[in-house]
Amino acid sequence: MATQATAQRRFSFLQIAITLQTLTIFLQAVSAGLLLTSPYGETLHSAGARVMYGASMLYVLAAVLAWKPGGGSPRPVWHASGFLVLASVQVVLGIAHIPSVHLPLGVLMFGLSVLALARR
Image (cartoon, rainbow, N blue to C red; front, side, top):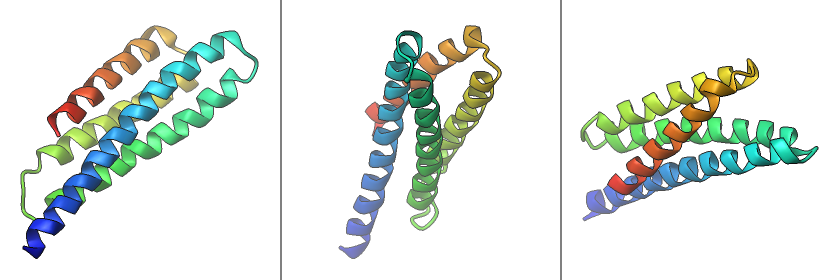
C-alpha cells in the first residue's frame, strides 16, 4: 500500500511539473504579445523565459524521480529532456533575436507540452 501511495505522489509531482511547464509556455505567448504593445513587455518576457526554463528543469527532475526509484519506463525522462533541449534552443533564439524560428518553436513547444499533459 505504501508503494502505491509513493507512486501516486510521484505521478502527481510529474503531472504538476508538466502543468507548470505548459502554463509558463502559454504565459510566454501572452508576454510576447505584450512585448509588441507595451514598454514593460520585454522585461516580463525575459523574466518569463527564466521561469519557463526552470519549469522545464523541474519537469526533468520530476520525470527522473518518477522513473528511477520505481523502475518504470524511462520514456518520460526522454520527453522531459527533449523539452529542456527545446527550451535551451528557444532561449538562444530569443537572445539572438531570431523571431522567424523563435515564434514557431514556441508554438510547437506549447503543443507538445499540452500533448504531454493530456497523456498524464
